[in-house]
Amino acid sequence: MDLYSVMSVSDRTQALKWFAAFFGRAADEVIGEEHLWQVGENAWVVVDDSEVRAERVGMAMITLGVSDLDDILARLAAHGIDHGPVETYDNGVRHVEVLDPDGNGLSLAEPPAQ
Image (tube, rainbow, N blue to C red):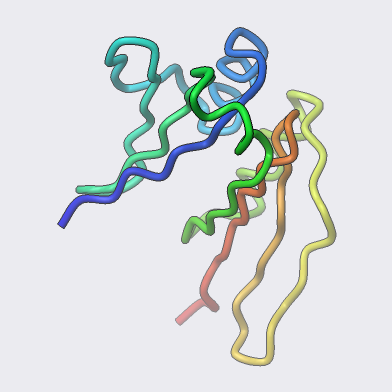
């Protein structure tokens, strides 16, 4: 099974800069007007500003599992990208939410060290 999570955005130019900073690289693939970042073997985050998705701008929410949360947050800070507070759940998972310029939520979750 493959997963394509679409982040509807209002300004493609601004979004592409932001998502490149968030992921630490330019899009892995461009198909037409869609820009795709591969985030897992069969999982992609898609940035799309097409008119047919205009009413969904800023309404997406995804959570990405990571193993290097502090490094990612430092890279985001270096690019001026803010985030919410880092929470630690009862099970030891560290979680933080980052909002793109349109308000789409991209959460990062790091499992506890083994």
